[in-house]
Length: 293
Image (cartoon, rainbow, N blue to C red; front, side, top):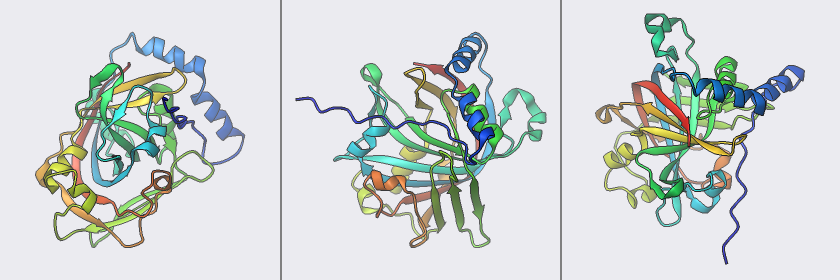
């Protein structure tokens, strides 16, 4: 007998500050008519390539229960799995002047928001198509209302949430502290502290999945595209990304004791697990294209 599929987690936008303006903005960026009109218009225009130089890119990675993760996976998509486990990453970084590549030198006038995107790793797309270096975005959070709301209005591949408080700061000793506070909104919560590690080592579970620290890092950070569920359209958005990470520059990190709290891990069965962490100091980033599957 076929087991019923878990109910898909919704990614609805809720403003972090309660009140009429926040509710109106939430309705605006969730309007099916407005989103359909935007898709009809932009599908006839060339894609506007977006560009940024990102820095302090912290990867927090866990092996989580694959059955629990199924609630985040669109129909037809299959995640990478090993022995009932799948990989989950909370990736946080600081942009530098995130905006249209066509702006050229004027892009330095654009803001530099903080962003955290949380993802799984895809093994198969709908229709049995093998997935090569593709991730599934399940949560995206920004500290900027303009960018968070703009991502909802103008993109299907990166529907973002707005944090009430977002800190991602490197200390003088090299430690990096990250805090995402959702307030009354829909952003996920995160608190972590990581510091430089003396050795490049794999936690026990990761050592069973990868031959080396280098192969694990390559798998986790070298991607060419990302997908996400488009709830109002009942389809999947697919976006091409360019993130040319120099693997030789990646630095090992370790989580400070009792300083990592990510409530989503509880439902993924990994609330007591220590993350496998590393840092990409800086890398250029571009969003190249986007389409609905």
